[in-house]
Amino acid sequence: MPLFKTIQEIAQYITISSASTASPMPKSRGAEEDYIKPVLGDALFASLQTQVTTPPITDIDLLDKVRAALAYLIYYKELPLMHTIITESGLRNVTSDKIQGAYRYQYEATRQYLENEGLSALEKLYEYLMANVETYTTWQSSDAFTRLNKNLIKTGKDFSSYYYLFQPNRTFFALQPVMQEVEDFYIKSIIGDTFFSFLKDTTSLSPEEKNVVDMLKKAVANLTIHKAITKLAVKVRPEGFTVQLASTDRNPASENNAGADQLEQLHQETYRDGNAYLSKAQQYLNNLASAEVFHDYYVSSFYQDPLTTITDPNDCIRGIYAF
Image (cartoon, rainbow, N blue to C red; front, top):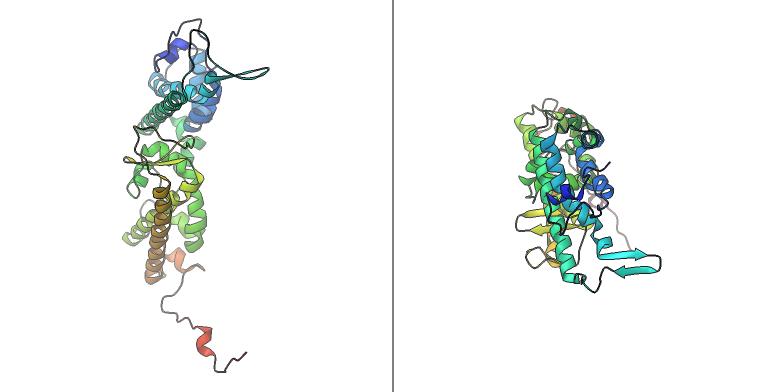
């Protein structure tokens, strides 16, 4: 049973013309699976579904937040097949002698509006869950919550202190797989898994360790943005960096977003800045590491003694080479 049972329930969140008991329900399962379940986790989603199917509904506030996002995202996902229908003889426009189909610009503007409102409501859902995490223990033990807390940077708010995000909680969740790649390929490759896990999971760090974590977080944030530009459908708005549900070749006139040239410049700058912070962290570690400070790093193969003299083989050549 879907989280909406009637069209009138959907119409409480989104304006629908002539929403009556005879109006057909849009298919909602796809939107629930794609956009809601990844946020709630399987157990909490199943609990809400059970309450809707067999009342009473005990999580009224949570269901309201979920439905506020789901209403828009259902129509965002279904709009292509509402605008154009599939028949046994091919595609047909939804037009008649009384109803004119929407023009392309109207369709695109409406779908963008549905996406924007749906994502805004998803951000509010994240905020609600985080503010009430102790109440929703099934969410706290879910894979969805684990995914939000498995990295060096653990929240959208924390990420935004290093690189500003629009709708930080939702955008952080979308960026998390890319951030995981950054940690695996860039961070662990210079400090090792053991020391990285210590910095990530230890709550009481020394001042020196906090300095390293700060530099590494700056590197992670910049390199995550760098990789996300080519891997995800991103936008750079005046309010910050964000991830959309799908890429589009045209932006609404009301939105001021970075163009392709600006994105390419950002792609290069974040790579340069991320690696600069990474080099700074590595130098800091090598200069201070000892048996007492940064012990796990000091005893690892990743430590490089700054006093070690590296000899250039070319400086040792005493003969003459001739063709």
